[in-house]
Length: 62
Image 1 (cartoon, rainbow, N blue to C red):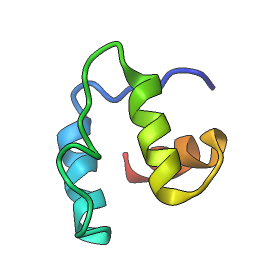
Image 2 (tube, helix red, strand yellow; image 1 turned 120 degrees about the vertical axis):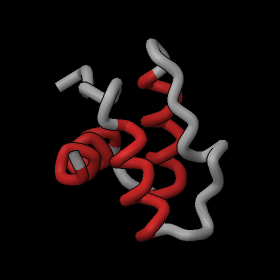
Image 3 (tube, rainbow, N blue to C red; image 1 turned 180 degrees about the vertical axis):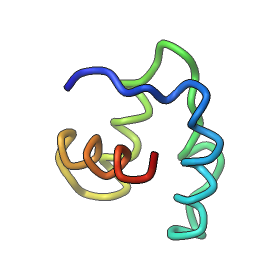
């Protein structure tokens, strides 16, 4: 799985993430269309998990 369908769902997912990780900033969760890899990299760093684990985690939120 290379692409996530973040567009349209991201605000809802971001809200769920902020509930779980209150110390994460808007910059940590900043999503720009076409820059999925940058977002995944930031989340990967914050969570200390692999790219695949982060994608699975995000899919569970959506």
